[in-house]
Length: 403
Ligand SMILES: C[S@@+](CC[C@H](N)C(=O)[O-])C[C@H]1O[C@@H](n2cnc3c(N)ncnc32)[C@H](O)[C@@H]1O
Image (cartoon, rainbow, N blue to C red; front, top):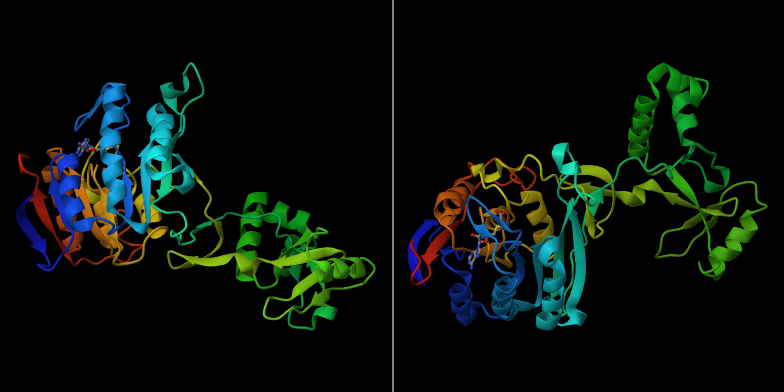
């Protein structure tokens, strides 16, 4: 590979490579084997279309051959605790899964993430079969035993199961008065009951305000949950004792949290679900493999580059990178498209390598990444990552490429 230019910090290790990813990956194998913590690729899906920036219509076997030559090289680049994400739609997903089982080993399969990418609208709904609104990310570890994931949380909306409040939490638990959350809040607002509060304020507004009140009072808002016989001897005994007790019973079990039981049911407090996400305290749940919360609409101006068909949201890349790497780790994308993976990795303080064969490396990736370094890209995850600019990258071309 030939160095074309260095942008920003001359000590940078970030690499933007123009050319076919096959020779590029072979060349990288000499210096970076076992050194990449996270690989995200979003290869052409082979949808049968010819897009403005790249071909997405090649013969099925040719497509499979391309994957078959690249995946083993990618595996060689992964660190022992590394992880690869491959983004794909339904057309080739099943074939890719079988191939990845072969290359990475079935035991190293971690997950199929289902990503909601669109909503049915207009003429799209007149399909001969259900409208397809999802894509997939196949996730494999280099070695499942060494891979550790950084647990992620996502904000949840109003959780109606949390419908109780301890009115006098400052008193000893034996005196606690456990009331209906909505009733308590209605009375606090000066209404005699929930019905009057809803009539005066509007049902939806009252419910939204009640939830906001619950979040502010999360240390005393709770749900009452059935206790199974598998919960452990002491808790089951407390459950039985509490069935005839007038108030709350407690089981202290240091260093674990105390268990509170009322009327045979366990009290789970809302504050256990409060997490800080993007600098805000919100009620959150652990991330699952169903991702419906990342908007694909409105990303066309991210990075200030228009790249129709295939551009991914910066928020999606942020999630993949944050769940699998720490600052300073190396991230690689050898189907870089408009440069999303590199831009997000840079803003998150990861080192990155991006490879793209199309001319849009020069027209899209390069200016986009220059703006990230300069701190003038205000789009995507810039605000939530508090990115202000800095760092740099080197541009290379593979032998024979037109850069
Ligand atoms: C679906 S797009 C990736 C979009 C990207 N994730 C983004 O957010 O902008 C796939 C990209 O792979 C590139 N590509 C296809 N074959 C390639 C190859 N052999 N080497 C390098 N890049 C390739 C295409 O030019 C296209 O830009």
